[in-house]
Image 1 (cartoon, helix red, strand yellow):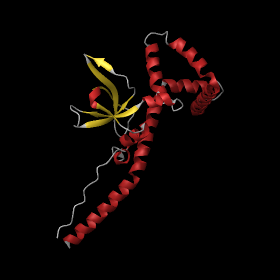
Image 2 (tube, one colour):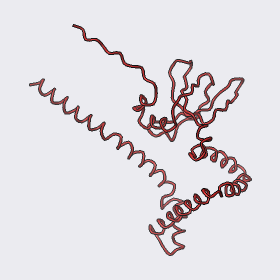
Image 3 (spheres, helix red, strand yellow):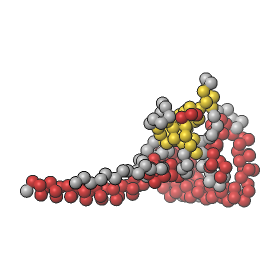
Image 4 (cartoon, helix red, strand yellow):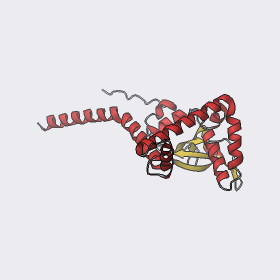
Amino acid sequence: MWRWITGRWKELVGYFVAGLLAVLPLVLTIAIIVWVTAFLRDIFGPNTFLGSILASVGMRFGFEGVVGYLIGIALVILGLMGIGVLFKWGAQKFIQGIVDSLLRRVPIVGSLYGSLKQLVSMFDRSDETKLKAMSVVYCYFGNAGGAGVLALMPSPEVIAIDGQDYHVVIVPTAPIPFGGGLIFIPVHLVKPIDMSVDNFIGIYVSMGVTTAEFMPRTPVPQLENEG
């Protein structure tokens, strides 16, 4: 009787685990979307400073409350699309030249704008040279051949500190790889990996589950049945 109960219990647990694994990718995707949505709401929500500006834009067209706020968002989206059209038609250098000349003259703001501009430009898929500058690397801890971590190297440039050469790498967090730490790693402990940035992000989002899909694997030896 006890064996029968134990067997049925293991069977039920197996069904539960199978169902959990089936819906886990969807749950994680929804969780990340909810996190990003909450982040944007905290910045552009109706009760925030930027949200009040959007609502005031809608009020100028005779709309108030939530409707005015939504009208403001719609106008901003249309404005961004208009800028995108101008950029596609070749006005990018002209517009960015004006913005750069204005912001770079402002102390602190100019430095912050320049750094963020470089960061954003690295994710611009229309410019393959900037995208290729970002590479996935494997960084060893302590000594080569020991424990390590997958990281993203924004630039192949070498930084010299106290006579030692370093690479600057970004180690993201899982399963939300939009945060993490900026670390200086000695050059001899950084190994290039033949992997795309998209696959790199996929590994962190999946909390390592998809690692075997994008990195070389060592075959697991088959145990011979004895007797």
